[in-house]
Image (cartoon, rainbow, N blue to C red; front, side, top):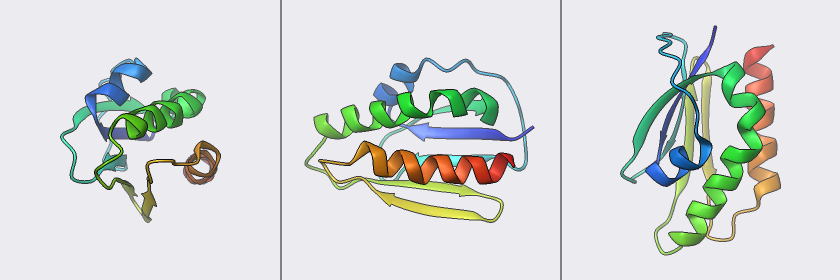
Length: 108
C-alpha cells in the first residue's frame, strides 16, 4: 500500500479533513509547499485519490489568501520529482491534471 505524506499549510490540511491511517511506508509520496510552515499528515493513496479535487480546491483557497509570497508545490517519491508553481491565480484544472496523472501512474 502506498502512502502519501502531506506537508502542507494547516489551513489546507484542515480543509481536507483526512483521517490519519498510521501507515508507515518507505515508498511514500511527499507533497509539500516549499518555504511555508507546514503541518504533516499521512494518508494512503487510496484515501487521497477521491479527495484530490478537494485538495486542489484547498490549495487554491489558501493561495488566494497568501498571494504575496511565491509558492511551489513539490511532489517527491520513488522515481518521482515534480515541482508545480502555484501563482496567486493558480488554475485548479492544471494542478488537478498534474496530480491526477501522477497518482494514477503511481497506483497503476
